[in-house]
Length: 410
Image 1 (tube, rainbow, N blue to C red):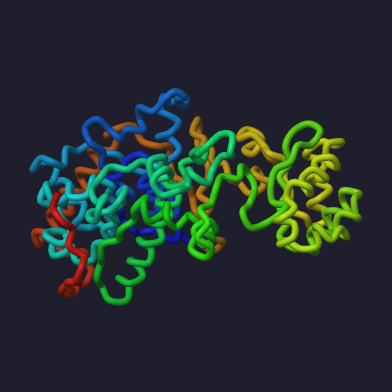
Image 2 (image 1 turned 180 degrees about the vertical axis):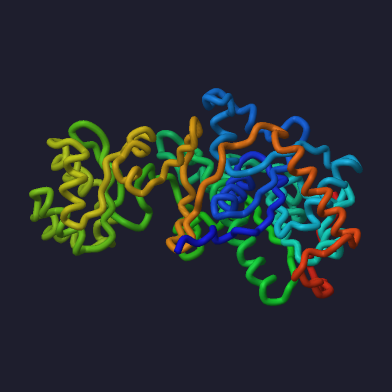
């Protein structure tokens, strides 16, 4: 029997822009949540980050992060905008925002001051660069800025290139998943005790958490990690090498794999060489081993080597372009591309077999769902004023105030 999406019936109010927040709420929408995207009058900034544009003239950046949502434009600094928001929150389960810390408080919408008491079952997720307090609290932060500040850039690149940002906004992406995880945990806690809570996800915390294994290496050795290009600081060989027609990445984690690798290369003597007998020894003889590997693989194309090595249980891959990766047969097999009319996107990697995601409609035009959203808001306002609590919805218990959760004013 076909089952509804895992989050069917969950109502989410999305006040986020750019990447981390919209990615989080898009995954919620893919799994059945009703997501209302509340945008400022000028819209989400990513609507203007083009070209390229989709056939429907959406910026590709915006289109990648906002499918399955309804859009309404509100000025939340005004009483009228706030009234509509309160109407939506009356029936909402989750509110996600990524304003500069202190913005909601300045508008009279602070969680501890207003929202927690008025909507005790509400889960509020706040996404920010650095959090609300501390030496960097309240300051603006973007992905590459956090990559620089948190040491990620310093270990990416090579000695020749110097510090280099990772080619994708990895901090934003992972922060979106941190927010998603926190929201789902808070909803599980609410199912137990009936109370919502505030969830916090910061780019700074996420970026610091990404310093594995380099952070652990420094904590243990005191040696400051340096950029190694595509190499690994603890494992050899774990790097890219030049094949006949392009680059090949080879990942060897243990000695048994190394022996199979050498046999597949036609160089079994490498595995018997005392210089390369263990990973620790290979780390100290990186240059000599690399020279032998480069000489052996230079005669055949990268994809040929990748297939031969993988067949022997040795992890390897040709270094593909984005186009090659998206057109790969395994991408098609895993159904990782979403197509809805002229809309194309990438599926969420969260895959549930019993309640599979059903990616929603193409990303909305700015304010396209105003009438429908306003109708829901009016319904919520009526229920909040006592015109009929939905049947079966219990009154939530009084909220327990927890120490240390107050958001400072800025």
